[in-house]
Amino acid sequence: MIHTAMPAEGPLAGTVRVPGDKSISHRAVLFAAMAEGTSRLTGVLDSADVRSTLNAVAALGAVVDVSRGHGHGLDVTVTGWGERGPREPDSSIHCGNSGTTCRLLMGVLASWPGTFTLDGDDSLRRRPMLRVTDPLTLMGATFATTEGHLPVTVSGAALRALRYESPVASAQVKTAILIAGLRAQGVTTVIEPAPSRDHTERLLPAFGVGVGRDAGSRACWVEGPEALQASDVSIPADPSSAAFIAGAAVVVADSRVRMTSVALNPTRTGFLRVLERMGADVETVVGNATGAEPTGTVIVGYAVGLHGTTVRADEIASLVDEVPLLAVVACAATGVTRFDGVSELRVKESDRLAAIADGLTALGATVRAGEDWLEVDGPARLHGARLSSLDDHRLAMAWAVAALTADGPVEIEPWEAVDVSYPSFAEDLASLGAR
Ligand code: S3P
Image 1 (tube, helix red, strand yellow):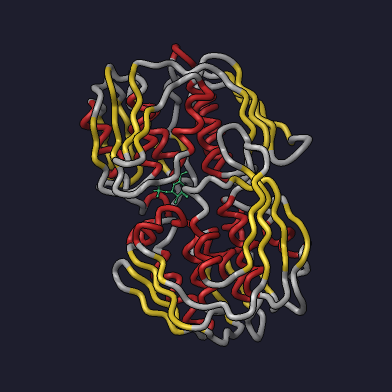
Image 2: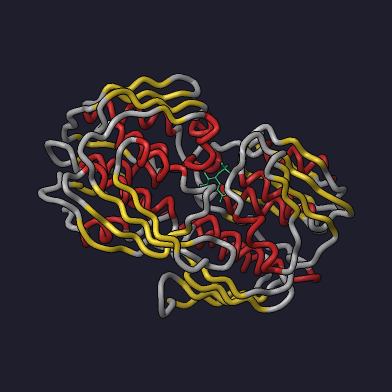
């Protein structure tokens, strides 16, 4: 489907509650499936990626009941497989577009007897899997990959504990190892080069499992064997989705938008710190925590005099999914905006560094991209254009934000990519006054 995003005719204003957090939704569903007993999850993101996780755990024997919640998102009841373990499904498990689903599942399945095959769509089949299968192999599981990619067959085994210095700051890698470590004898530790999102460390205790952490050494650990117990989990709004609404407000003159119940976990809110540094008007009002996640209202407004900034390599993990949006905002700022240490973007749902450079250039901006850096010159006068989303949800939404300041419509295809994380994005933007 082609989506035609129109230039803004006036300021954006109003309040939105963006959908539930994708990372926390995946973890809540997986932990509930692993647990003994029945968990009740509320505010679960209703999106293609989370549906992949729900379908996967159902295929593996968890009993899943999904209903449209009375509040936001889905109400999901999961009765886990607990000590019985997952059952071997008749066919391969299709993870769709979701890297989190397949990489976390590798950690879940590594310790159980049986053979499980994981597969995904064309985009997921291009993404690297050895970053997860290598450490899990050191723990004792066996993987047959397709030259380091999906389809991957996991043969589970009794695992050894592991102390692992991860070469990448990846919460998916960290989580897969910690989950596997829960069924190994002894302490399994992951040390990261930079702190990645810490939802696993925050959520496992709700399922009765202790997680050790040392911020100074960027280490976290579990001591196995440990069994998860069912828990009730409520899920706050996704800051990565809120980022697109915030970015829209920053670039459209005189806009001011409020986003409620947003997860304000500092491992996720790097984009707010960068927007503030660029001169945007950003206010956060911390409210009651949602479980172990700090949560609050984010108010973002347009400010005159937006300027470029350098986003350092050590900041990237805290905004890794927000670089496409920040690059669009950089087009409205005066001066150069530079991103360092962004090679991970080359192995996301698309090669996002190449895609940002191509898309913004087609819109009329001046962009330079190296192997692991990106520079955007601003201010740029953006023109209407027809752009591919490359089936990447974050690119589709970034192009829609760019359209707000362009001198003509931006046609985005395929638009359905947004279903992966934020199916109601166009409606939410329209509710604030966008066309
Ligand atoms: C995620 C971690 C990030 C992020 C992805 C979701 C998670 O990936 O890009 O959208 O839920 O753990 P990496 O951990 O590979 O950086």
